[in-house]
Length: 110
Image (tube, rainbow, N blue to C red; front, side):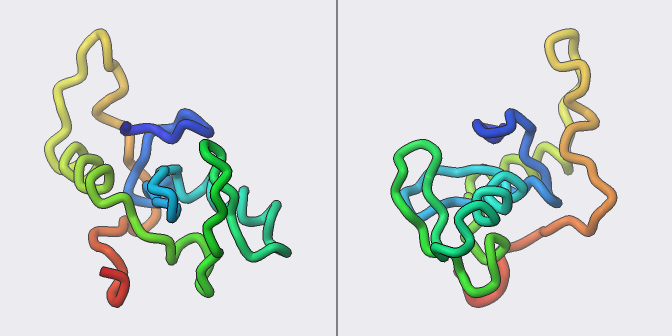
């Protein structure tokens, strides 16, 4: 999947990084931050799909593992955008942002 099933936004290399919960389900970092804010006192994030709890890492949601397959697909699409077609008119601009993009898994989490 190239979009978050919570917000239906396409993953990108900035605020909508594909982050993976312990259960294996993937959501964008922005949605997981919102879920963490709601459940912050419990120090875990409930999966919206299967309801399995994932402990919130010390550094917050940004320390959850990237879904590497999705991340690499988004990165490849950004580096080599497909030609926009009538079925995907905005495909060339999806995934762009003004923040510094993440280009690799944070050190120590591999």
